Amino acid sequence: MAKLLSTREVADLLGIHEKKVYRLITERGLPATKVTGKWLFPSHLVEQWIESHTINYPGQRDFLLRTPALFVVAGSNDILLDRAISVFMRQYPEYVAVFGNLGSLGGLQALRQGLCHVATSHLAEEDGRDYNFAFAAKELEELPAVVNFCRREQGLMLAPGNPKRVGSIADLEAQGLTVVNRAMGTGTRLWFDRELEKAGVDPRHLSGYGHEVSRHLEVGLEVLSGRAEAGPGIRTVAAQMGLDFLPMHWERFDLLIPKDRFFDKNIQAFLGLLHDDVFQEEAAELQGYELSQIGKMVYPAREL
Image (cartoon, rainbow, N blue to C red; front, side):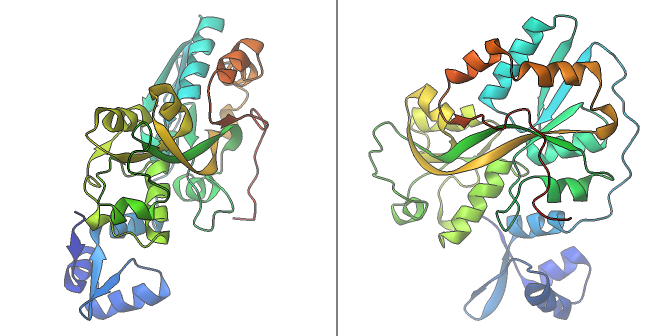
């Protein structure tokens, strides 16, 4: 169950007077709910709100990856990305490719610190018009080059046969189902929390909401084992595990690359293989992907 903070606790957390808290609710969208006439604040949403309004980050460090044979990708995990890295290793044995599963926001932070060559992210903006750019603008001193990797079908992974007949996000609370969740900072968690809010579902009423795992495969395993009845994830994992899947939307999954390193040999080699027949054949074996824009540069939908 998510912890609820009082007005005084939020004021202490932010180091402000209680009266300022009320202004933040109306002026800056501080997440709050009124119960029995008193304002209460879900702690996890307050943490997200603080993170999303942070604008003064430390400067981007000098790039730390100086080993020419090393290629580091960090951020959101993905089955097709795993295959791309595997193909890259086979096609270019002179490189050592590694992936850091840090979640979308963690990937941006690693990029800022010069700890990876490429960050992978699928952070949807609040209005749903774009992905990643607003978050990158907050995290980085300079917007990176953004290259599309794929579009993925996202939704709920459910037990085989969907025995509970889940047809919407609202059914999770209505039927008292046990869920498994993704960690804070992941694009899937951001999406799931927004969908719960849109459906009027109180996370405090969801059994298992606080049970967080780090990968889509782990969500699938929790549902397959029966330890959870539903969890947010992508179609390809549900298909591989024989789970039912309730599709919700298609999301954009991008590669974010520092502009001053875009033409490095390892990065160009990786981008080049995205159109290679070997990789395309691997991609064709998986469900839930759309690749019409793969390898193409993406630009903000509006000025940041």
